[in-house]
Figure 1 (cartoon, rainbow, N blue to C red):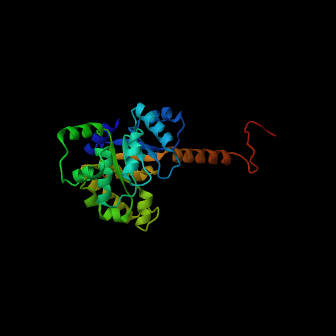
Figure 2: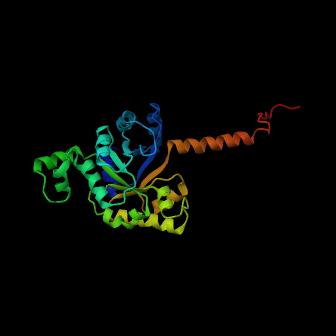
Length: 269
């Protein structure tokens, strides 16, 4: 998918598949294409990647028809512009709690490079853009998706207000941060947490935007998809690496003796 196709699929409620990619290895995009994904989630909030590396990753995945969506470190419109200029097809804004934040982000994602008073007046509905400019901006930004992270109790309380923005293409829940904000750290089976997730799913789909939860545990994800989530944002390269090698080394250790020597079943004493 490219960004425009991603936007259409998310808003239409179609199933979209993605994972988080942390490794900047030039070999990695070729491996990721084997997963039959639609998009990749590239993080700069918790991952020490520089601007040049992120741009290379975006352009590599875009060339393979995997829409690169980048989470910026904070909900800042200037970071948005810098990131889309580097090749991102979408922006994930972390820890959004206010509708005013969405409006600022929307201006950068959907109406860039317009800035300043003219942009603010257009977003507030105080003035209309000239037809030629409006057409130009719509074409220029047609492939730029806006994702917002809902990951706190205050964001959940203001969700109706936040979702009134016509510019949001997808809500992405941060389950770890949300569980902590609810006072239930990592208690993903708790009924209060489960109800919060289902509320976000229901309200997001009613607003006509995509909804996903970035999670590592498939049994939770399957239930949330059944409840209406249409973005399957499963795991990450580093999490999958950790799970697979932890299990494999555990098996190897279980099949060796206590001294750490490999037991050769073909040798008899």
